[in-house]
Image (cartoon, rainbow over all chains, first blue to last red; front, top):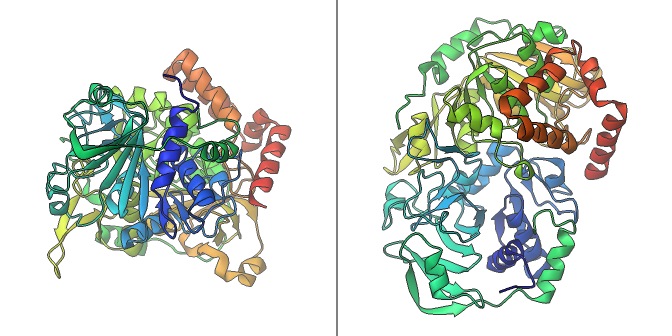
Length: 256
Length: 324
């Protein structure tokens, strides 16, 4: 099946649709930032982007997308540069509505691993870069949205290491750990959109992207998925969304 | 998870306070040379490095510490970039405390970090970005910990041995993020007067907290300003002179990393560096890099000559364009 858009374009567009106007979003570099910038241009003009390096309200310059969350490109025409600790404290206070995340591994409760593969932290099979601000975003934002390629090696029953907590062991485990708010609300993948059962907090298939089957999703998921009573089909990326997105990243640095 | 990483001195607020009380807090002259400043770093120190990733990294100071062949250091940095790789390759660090380590998305996961950490040669003690910031903030406040909502429920808690505390008012569980008092802070700023009063443009990162947290503070500055300039804009001072032990005037002191508004990071240089690591392996490639950029050029100007004036000028133009 060939489609007129790349996986990164699909994720950026699906991610942008989640963001409502008059809200705030904690966005990392790459696809999340593109998703936020697209939402701002299309349907959420009063969305404020916050970037981990200590940036509030930047205007992303088309063709000069930032490579890291704390460099000059990320701060282009920003409204405030408050310092890193204070930026996260806006989220701890409750000012951040959305947080975007990705990760090497994600489990059936939405927990994400970006630290180590293997069972011994101090002698890892693969050492990954680490949390950065992902743990803080997962802990402190009102709602967290995971954007990721849908691959069996990523979708594991239990992550090797919980870097960023979603629903932990399910049920009220998050609440008991000291996080009475927040959590991953949606997982947007290259195959569909997923939510979590409100009681068990297990991952649930909510919608399929056009042309994707349930079998395909099951094949690429390493744990049993719940299914919403009626599984929807997402609207494919529109020509308009694709055009706007491509203007932001003309060199296709992040769009693939 | 095994390693009881937290050592008492990291959050010993009484000891840290006594150390400050015993030290001169002069309003006098702080200007000195890079080697004199770096000589204040000794083997085994906990060294906090200012800036963030490839932004405002005090690379001239880091280079001088490596030239002095320091050993058994603990590097503390929020997001760790090439400076951490060079410290690993030089055998200078035994522990890195950080939230993230690599150069950035386009260069992939750091092969140098993987090599030294997966082999067990260097311990990478991971804290969340906010937790590290609050560790410096708690130390800057002179208290042993601050309550927060970071890292709760995650496996990061066990890595650094963070404890939780019950809110005495509501009973809620909170993270008790322990203070981190570094032995030495290495910082790079935009402007300072010779007494060490510092101004920073653009991102403040965590530098002001780090300067208050550390026992010894070493600063390099892009520009040396007059006492009169400081006094005309006292609202711009983010680190007062009495906190600073040594100051060195080093234009381009963060290059090839960026300095906000002055020069952009040299991404081509990062590309050449990582290509060499891909081709020759982390140990050999970093050893070559250290020989060429750290050990061979004795003065910082000789180091900058390796990049050449044209490249420096190009990075300056790009910074101007981005921050106008």
